[in-house]
Length: 203
Picture 1 (spheres, rainbow, N blue to C red):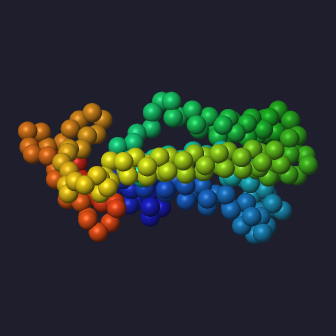
Picture 2: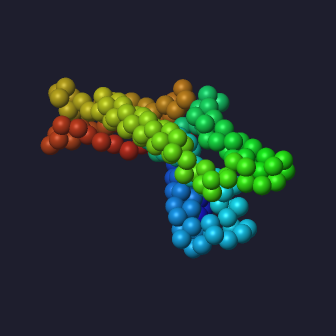
């Protein structure tokens, strides 16, 4: 909640993704916490745990992936194509909704939950969710490595013999400092790489 409030105040996209990730992690451990509190043994709490998909394994991976992108690229926006990454998670939500609807309005009994097992702990779902998270975590690491490599190529000129460089930043094809001199970057002669931090100047 604090991260979400901070995201609203600072309007930082990465904080939105991070707050959502923390929220899903809290939901992930909720079945164990509530289960040990006796919810699986008492109604209506048992139905709440059965028919509320708390472990959103198919959402955790994409959220970490997009958090990484928004953190390293502040101009990142979720495209229509990117939304397909959430399709498995949405399908799982629809699947649980179907089970709830059938048990309550058609069978009027525990038809799909006759074995007393929460679907969040289904073996196939857990393994598929774990595989999804591993794939997205690897994709996040690869994105970070590409970012590091790109940043090194852009700002590291120490081995070229030049003492400084000039240039302007661009975001989505829009250059900063219109009709103004370029930025000047003086290289750190004591190190092989010079790191700089820019704030895009629209004026």
